[in-house]
Length: 268
Image (cartoon, rainbow, N blue to C red; front, side):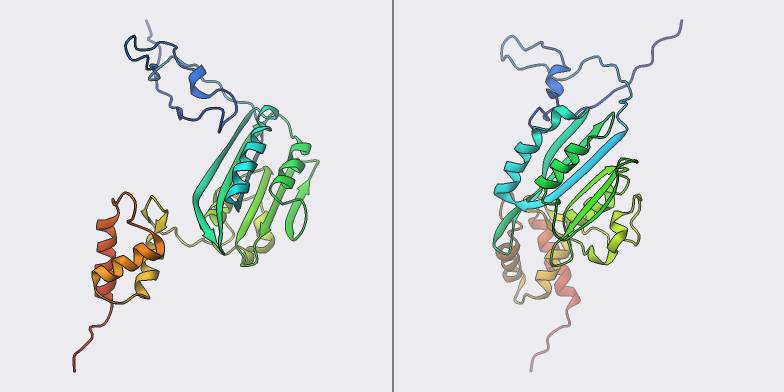
């Protein structure tokens, strides 16, 4: 006789109701616990997968002052019950921009039918409802796209609803702080690929403080002194290598690499 096909499905077990609609993985797994430690056996359970019929999707993200970001995340959690699927998570590291610590918020949702009232609420919450924003809206086709740019030409916030094919490169523009003003109205296009190639993302060297190789090389090019002095300059300006220390070998390697590119200084 034919045997049933077995496979594996994975779920992020630490995502509970704080970040995603519903009760998360705890309601899907067995209630068995260890008789000694009482540790739950959150390791395996039988599941049945069905396709989610949620054709209308939305994605929204914004940089906000850190204190406002936490308030906004709690506010957006109140929208979870209006969607078939919803999640709201922070992104980036708290970093100072012109003296103000900022943090990113990313909201995703999907539903069986459009919720135009929810779009209006999201726009207001993300400061996209008015002012200098780019907007495209087609209520009949349930398409909605809004962008707000900062004074330096980078994205501060966006909302995509209906066709969200552009979410990958638009989110990358916002998170990486890449110039976006030159894209103009092309930011509102429902396309999976950007209208022009984006600069490749620089590798992350310091995970604790989210410091890229490009930022490290920029500081090294403007620093002077021996290897120890240059490493110290990196730690003072970017804080890389000051927490867990796992990136210190990579930092020393970049210091040596930068020194090898500089012309030798002769003696008189």
